[in-house]
Length: 599
Ligand SMILES: Nc1ncnc2c1ncn2[C@@H]1O[C@H](COP(=O)(O)OP(=O)(O)O)[C@@H](O)[C@H]1O
Ligand SMILES: [Mg+2]
Image (cartoon, protein in one colour):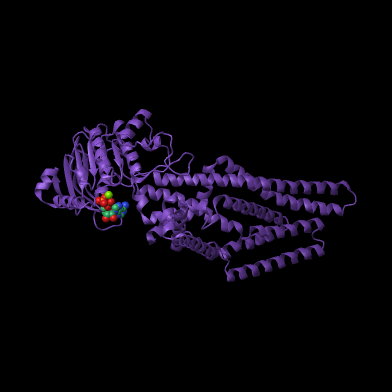
């Protein structure tokens, strides 16, 4: 990670603890208050116990009041029972609060990735690394998961409250003794501070985390299952996963290991303190300055103050608080990286005249060479056009810019004379029916795959029929294996489903139809037939087609050939054939392959 990013993270995490407790109350205010209330109550019980035991000891020696011993013992029993009951109640509350906190953080992460209108935040390697570690509050690979952390933190805070209370008890003996004892125990936090360094921001942790997530998904998600078996990658996957997890454990261990020297210092200091303190108590007892009850109470308190020492809290709280800071910081960083300044102009009725790319230059973030370089292109509304070019020419990029998933570096896209950046993003996108090359295959019913936002069944059936998806018999069939009555489709069948998705969007009012290699997996006859139907359905719409099949391409009104980031040829099929340029060359090449029977 760059130094700038590191400094930014350091700043973000400076008030982690505070963010953590704020997040707890956001996750569930009621539970958080109960949790804190129980911490205070449980923290005060040890003080009551110390005093009650002092009472019991005093009454043993008191022959006048025989009932006192019984009363003292009853108080001890009640306090002890209460502390047991509250402790188990607290465990429940902690687990529940931990789950709420996980849900809250999950929501924050979903919000971080889904809310920005652009895509930049999903493609930045720095942010993806941070996303991998930010998710760990649930996975627990580089630190304990949230529901466990909260329990440990609760225990640690109870001890802290008890320790402070017992310092108060010691103050009844000598205020300076109380201050000294408290200060020495608390100084262990400073002495052992190097044992709580965070490892999550370490580059090695981030890359191990990403690798372990990746190999895990490779193994458990169906898409790679075939290749893993055929290439014999099972053992490799397991070894990779185990290795990265082991590395994470090692790094975590290294970060939280107790260092030898500070340990020696702490031990010497504490041994000195306690020798002095108990020596003082013994002297005062021998001289009759304090009685039996006082010795009992102060000695117990002196032992109990140890609860203030460096311990579980120091290991559990910082990583848990850091998780919160990472998630919240990521939300902010992703919002910035993926932000597209939203316009205000409504796109209602657009495009009615033309979509014009003016001198457009665009390169992907972090890449020097532009994909589009001074591209000019005009699409008349209501016509059909095709974009042709070799793989990597920038056709899909052009589509993404038209959908305003990115903004150009230079130049503009104008729709009916308005800059795309001035249009309200949601309003513009609602005008589009787009099939991307890597379209989404939802693990949902046919109905939801065709109309993710809903449509009358009649429209859905019409769209399916027009797309030639004849194998579908029920709209309720789930299009994924692993569900009751779920089924998986072939690549070509899936393409028919997404073509139906586009057709359905057109029926619901979309005006601009973009098809990025929609029929690449269909056979030639199927493609030709479906494309005829698409052109029919989109006769008065603006249609943009990207395809390598000239039999399909030749049917549109105008064809653009792009190369080197610009349009190098344009015209209809006959014009381009007559021009004997790049288009003609590509066409002849494909035709000769067909003639040789390889198409
Ligand atoms: N998200 C991305 N980040 C960085 N580079 C990308 C991204 N998407 C595409 N590219 C690069 O941009 C170029 C154009 O890609 P693309 O528009 O998908 O080409 P086409 O659709 O014409 O095959 C390619 O060199 C590709 O590697
Ligand atoms: Mg493409």
